[in-house]
Image (cartoon, rainbow, N blue to C red; front, side, top):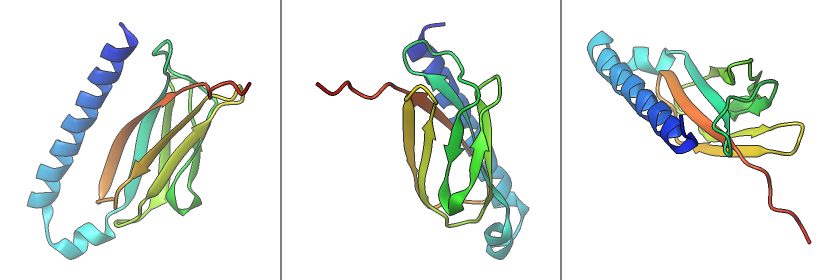
Length: 123
């Protein structure tokens, strides 16, 4: 699968998951229970050039949460709260990086895709 198509498919899946969470939380109860809901940022790290998953990369998020990607490029940042916001950053040992700004979080799981790119060479 081409990298652009793979990224599009993953983004579409993430959107579907978010919509499902929204419908479920609207049915499930009061606003106070939503504020107490655990929040997780889950995602996949992909190499931007090849579209392949990248393992063993440290991912850092809001509230100093950290995780490491597995062999499928998957990671989870836990210990977050409703309303948290900030950056999700990943940096591979070979210098490839990815960053994503997250808006105030809602209860449940936010699914993201980070594409690792090599920084431009300095001359």
